[in-house]
Amino acid sequence: MSSIPSNQLAADQAVVRQFLDRTVAPAQLSPSEVADYKDRIIRLMQEKNARLVAHYYTDSVLQDLAEETSGFVGDSLEMARFGHDCDAEILVVAGVRFMGETAKILSPNKTVLMPTLEATCSLDIACRIEDFAPFCDAHPDREVVVYANTSAAVKARSDWVVTSSIALEVVDHLMGQGKKILWAPDKHLGNYIQRTTGADMLLWDAACIVHEEFKSRGLQDMRSLYPEAVILAHPESPQAVLEIADVIGSTTQIIKASQNLSNDEFIVATDRGIFHKLQQLSPNKKFIVAPTAGDDATCRSCAHCPWMAMNSLDTMLRSLEQGDNEIQVERELAEAAMRPLTRMLNFASEQHLAVKGKA
Image 1 (tube, one colour):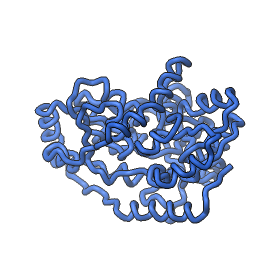
Image 2 (image 1 turned 90 degrees about the vertical axis):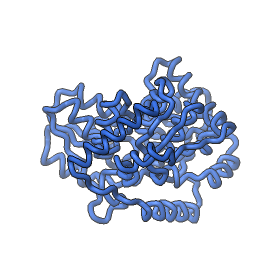
Image 3 (image 1 turned 60 degrees about the vertical axis):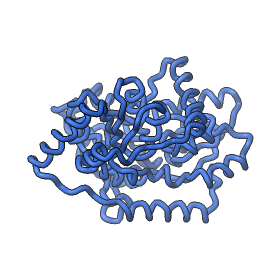
């Protein structure tokens, strides 16, 4: 069930389009330029005691650089936890802005830099605290559960923050306590949780511009071409896509499924940035990008987040050299956002669950 006014939806969609209009694809670098940038970045990271954490959806050269320099590649919460546990003074976060904020919340005494602060997320910008707070206030009888793909301010207004890998368990737990849920921001993930658990959920209406483009008709056609392939889908995808999928899971769960299943072919309905890690871990298997809406797709680079693509070697070098693009989260806000994050982490520990996801 959803109760977002249509005029608010139109305004949110307009904001997403405005942010998309500002995206700038990084310049293509020659092999020698790549090597030069990497050498300079590595030297600066050593001098400044910095560590690079990169999301699965970023460019393969950034993922490789993170692992070559004792950094980390993973989802946003794993990235933030690694940053908290490592001894670096500076964390360089290759991802989108809410990931930098999450890293700062978990490591308030460390400097958190990003290659660009313009890299955002359609879920984040379509769920602004100015709109979300009054929506929560209008439904005080509901437990507020938000996806990790949100701003620090939205997290601070919530009762729980969840990743895609633990959302089902948290909602099922709350339903067992007789609680009704207010869920934000991803409507497709919320709908999947609602259908799976049967919980009473009021859904915010936003979507990932990448996952929303996957189409069931195209998947069915693809399956006829690859009848032995397993379809792996992220739960941010539309219901029609999830109904066809063989495995539904977070980024980490998708990666594990590709390793554990004996099949040689996989059709993958999530950001194609993950293909680097999939192929790295299973070099003898074939991974096929799930079809999207094509030339008319909202995502200008189909099956790849345009904001993730803004992370590049040149912007990373500039951030390290100048110390700019620093993530700042006010202490009181960070403390408020940490409470629902801690609630999730404690729940996972009690239930012996791994807290991993696309987020």
